Image (cartoon, rainbow, N blue to C red; front, side, top):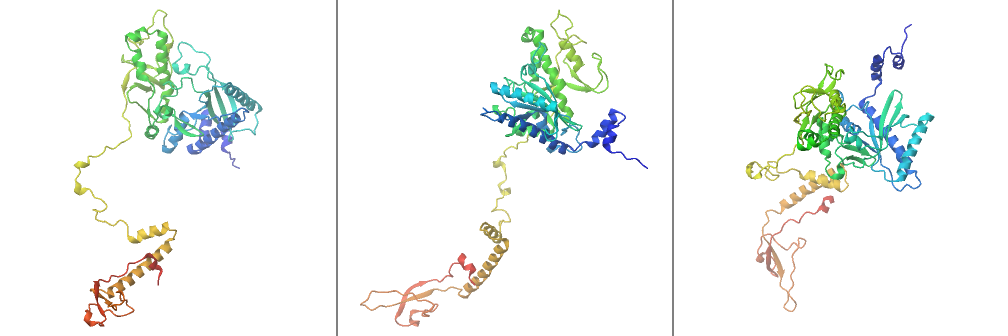
Length: 498
């Protein structure tokens, strides 16, 4: 008898980790389904924190947690992604950045954060099945707060000094959601080094909506960001050119101590090593100015660091290239205490990264206003000059009017048919008294003792004759005036008369 195995059994008994990972891919939901699950989990997690904050007895303001970084970009990528895309719109295996406060100014806010972390730790220890975020349990928590700095640390890290920072893991089955929880913005949150690498990462979302990081300064451009995401171009917002210029041989740079230069170099190294990974998401880096000259080595191992490919190579103005590992080693490991210089290991020239022109990228198209004076007026047609001068028939306009009055289509059509029938009868009646000759209206001479009275003859008296002369009627009638008889005007209320 043949034995059958389900997929879960095969995964548990996989002969190797590689084979197990291939089987796990078969269990993965679609990108859309996973984004829905991930988003619902984050909503549950954030709402829990905000509700806990609202329980404070002296709470006078509500908390608005914010999600920022790559998750918000991927949220929009899902709109433009296709099933064949690799990396672009991929919501798997990406952490989520969450910020609790814009600024944590009060002692009560700090106490709330301490109590919240203690609560998370209790939840982890209890391992309660009842407590979960959309089915995901809180599995792990680790503090990542930066409490110490050294001379080599970049400015971006210095901005995070002493800001409470935690790493959390939510787990459901074989799936995990990693969360970087930051207590609040850096004090100098408007620094160009804080959360400002590419324009496509410049969005955040919260309960109140989706916003731009620099929207408060008035420099945000949501349309530009959407255009970049749609065209898969990441515009570099990092001040790369400023850093490069400060490293070149100038009186100012010569006055810089090695420790100051190391900080500038490390800003560039951090950006290259950790931020350019956006290209793995299907993006092409672009810039309004110059860009770093980078490439990816896919085969050769690094001769200086002896690390295997793949890795990023950095081109320098001296025409040599180094792996990012070798670059970081030369900058941060001082070869001799007797020198302040940072030079290329091949030619001993100053180690200045090379800048190149940005690839072309698709801007938002804005049409130019045409010169109307140069247009041929004969070719410009209006509604009156067009061949089909009638753009709406009377019947259609009557239909719209009827619908405005609350009539149904059958009622409108019935009203239109009655109106057409009446029009035909009216025209037939009018044709019987045409052509319309002058009609003489007579008056009787009143006795001399009484005031003169004028009496118009009516059709019922039958005392007038079309085109007749006064001598042809009774003698007491004399000509008073001559007028033309016209058909009476149509009225809307006549339509219903039979």
